Image (cartoon, rainbow, N blue to C red; front, side):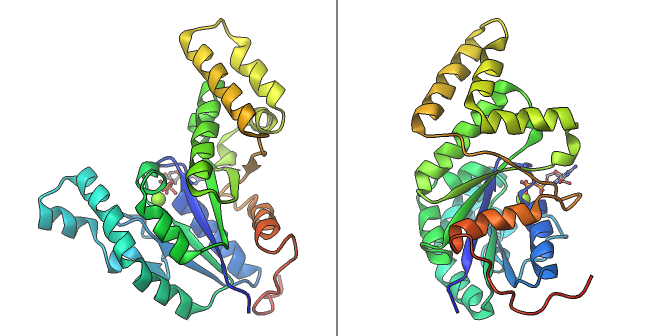
Length: 263
Ligand SMILES: Nc1nc2c(ncn2[C@@H]2O[C@H](COP(=O)(O)OP(=O)(O)O)[C@@H](O)[C@H]2O)c(=O)[nH]1
Ligand SMILES: [Mg+2]
């Protein structure tokens, strides 16, 4: 069997990572694929996720706060490094489960995962060269042109730090009207439309800055598109799977591990 592919879900706090992982894992299982959910958020409070492998079995935020007398933020930072120290134990458990895919939910605050050296060791251990990053856009932040450009920059920063394939995903697309949705996907597909939107209003320092940032993105490479999804309505999940396949198997479908249940 081929090595499993690992997908690491990143995005700003509240973007919808945990909900997406849950919805996508459910979709994968109903389509006949085996997916192992790995929770790397030591502060996870969502009882609905039910990860097969849970970092809280090794590193618990409340214990770190008590033991070292730290507040929640300090404990999160300490936990990020402790997770890296335990990652080979985590890897052994993941390998024992022998799934086609490993879906990794990352800590709530993006900087804990994306900006720390320890995370490279984590990605190496769990996915190696079969790793893919998903960057979730929160519609609440992506709806304005400066917000959208800022998220593109953040996504590019994540890609730059890990140097891995990255898919930009629009989460919670159900909260957007059809017009808003096509505006956002248009910005991602046609840089001219985004540029127009950024410069549309009277130039304020804010708009000038996002114009400069936009030019930097343009220089870095083409904007690769934005995949609309909704964990709430279970939409866009198959398209996301196809994106993953494009990276992991050069577009070939993996054989499901078992025959899907008839509808
Ligand atoms: N309407 C809607 N809300 C969502 C969706 N996904 C997540 N949410 C809500 O967004 C908030 C943050 O979601 P969560 O998955 O915890 O985000 P995380 O911090 O990135 O893991 C929660 O209140 C979710 O209920 C979605 O697809 N549609
Ligand atoms: Mg979460």
